[in-house]
Image (cartoon, rainbow, N blue to C red; front, side, top):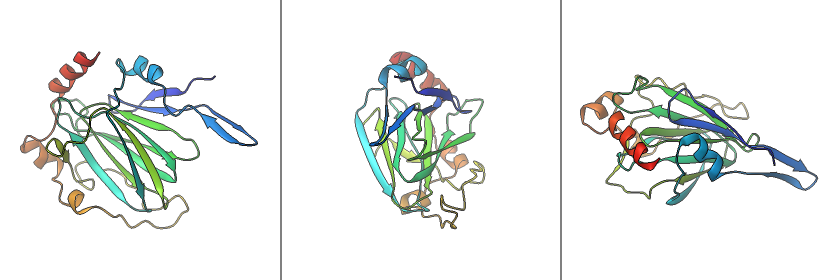
Amino acid sequence: MAPSEIAPLSVDGAWVITPAQFPDARGVFLEAYRADALAEVVGHRLEVAQVNCSLSDAGVLRGVHFADVPPGQAKYVTCTAGAVFDVVVDLRVGSPTHGRWDAVVLDDVDRRAVYLSEGLGHAFLSLAPGSTVTYLCSTAYDPAREHGVHPLDPALGIDWPTTGRDGSALTWQLSAKDQAAPLLASARDQGLLPRLDAVVGHLAALA
């Protein structure tokens, strides 16, 4: 079977995975996740501690979410129905690309996935009704260690789409928690953001 293509994003520690698809008269088959192929690129296996699934109407914006490091929370994100504009943000203090973001459209056509390492922030905007996103997570949810940065922070400058997959205008919808999230500078000043040296040490221990 042909392997998936795994390519790095511009944010170090994040990759986009494009699977080979095998359509026939019955439908389509693909390998949605291969632990060995991912580990060869990342440097260690993803130990899946929790699997999350969210359904979102068009315009729903979730994130930017991250967790304390160690242990942090690595994520393998796919969109099994609909489409989302999936964003990875470098929140690591001390990183040369601190504050940089990159994005991939995940949908039920190309069926790509994004892997983001510990210390990175994650967000997405739903581009279609009923967009279904599944996340394989390296650690279980711990509200005491989970944080957010406001996704509309001008300092991040994320170029969120204003139209959906069908060309209709989007009205962004944020949860009360995400609306109250601090700006990047405030989160950094409060000591909430992960430090690059802590992330590097944690990843070295996983290798």
